Length: 127
Image 1 (cartoon, one colour):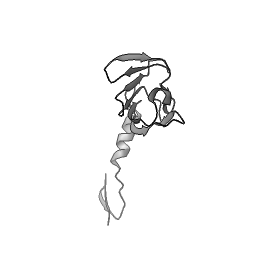
Image 2 (cartoon, one colour):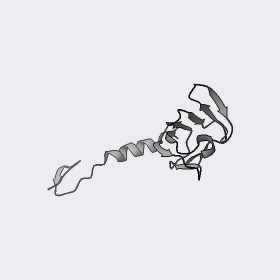
Image 3 (cartoon, one colour):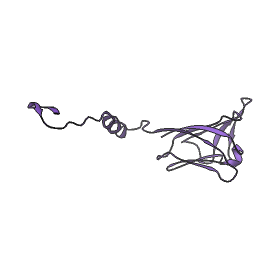
Image 4 (cartoon, rainbow, N blue to C red):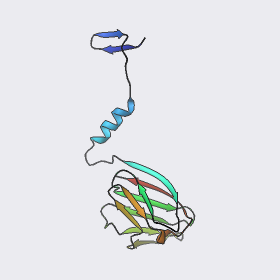
């Protein structure tokens, strides 16, 4: 027997659904000017194609780390789509304007030309 607590008190034989994630999702969807989406993942680059990643939202910040070689790319939403920051293993950071990391309305694309092949990468996107 299920029990429901409403303004009339406890009522037997009625089903109560509790979904704590519904409250979180609802609150996240109503935040104005705040981060509402975070996605993470990994991939291994191939010679055949650039790596297209679908997050389901347009990221305002993306970080892709090449775990094989130690290089990192970051894209900020205020930057032109073709521009990202690249940090190499030695620690040098440069502006990469070669469209290595390009955001789109549903995720981003990482160019194989920038990574090379068979590189294990991890990423985080926030939007």
